[in-house]
Image (cartoon, rainbow, N blue to C red; front, side, top):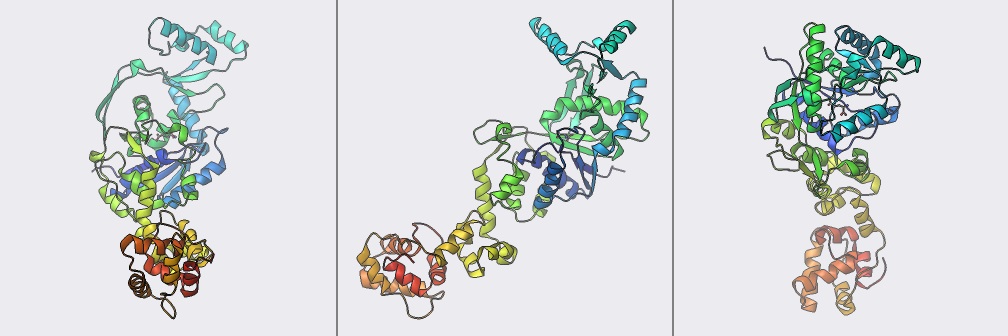
Length: 450
Ligand code: GLU
């Protein structure tokens, strides 16, 4: 029987979620939903100094806003007892060993290795201390940090995106699992949790590939100690780069989900883009997650870095709005002072919901008309139909202006648009004209601020 799917998104609450890590969250979520499996939100808060409750609340809020609901959640900070037990077992098995070097000493070792053209791999001095040396370190008040003893052999796995992957752990330093101050680094708790929560697949960025080789060795050690524990399969996706081809890390502040929400972007624009960036599929505006779930497929994921372009996101956002029925947006348009007629009149011309306000101001507030040929617009003012303006009024009005002035095409429409809205671009004028209303239309054509 094949294993049921359970994946996890495992952010550290030491910062805000951004497009890079949300892409990993989304892909995990899409895979879980497509496979009828479960999506776990795991809070990797072993770093008790940098982790905050505010960042954690932000992660929950962002995922909820994006529609990426989770089926189970856990925090690493509540599991230190479990990690301590496993660490003891690893010590007894001779796989976790104490090292006493300071950061400066390690740095010096690496420099020496480089000077001799050797790879800067830890020399395993910690495995060879004499009892006297250990006593001396302790007498100095040094506390050990703890390293995992790698096999120093090639570790192979079938990566669901990269295919056959091999990393020789002989070229990797034995990883520090526990720091001298007792803090667990990410490597060990993550493996313990993946086993304990029966995670079937780990989907994450390719910056973790070397780490995966290390973790596979940790998994192998743990699986021997934890009966029935089955390590996950792996899929490493390519990373995002900016439109300029540079890495995203420097701009992550402005690429946070919170910043995008504040900028008025729709969650569906973000999910539509991130689901497809770096895959063989085209990016299209999807108002629902369902089609993204159906289209999810590891075999479509490319190995090349994927370009994230904020402009593309804004364009997608516009496309989503252009088709949004009023019922879905009323609760956001009405507080701005808008209504259904206004929404239907302008939705094809806005990129953000906040642009609604601009158009409310144009149709019901005061604008300064843009007039180049006063005689023409004065004549037009006399053509505004009698009574309340409606859907047909614009056609009647324009035909009349055309007849009276002889103006045609652009020379007919542009001066009318500029006088009536104060802008040279915007939505189709028919509905806008009706929303502006007769009195304002006449006043504006006559050049009055109105
Ligand atoms: N907390 C880890 C990170 O943010 C999780 C990586 C993983 O998915 O295993 O890098």
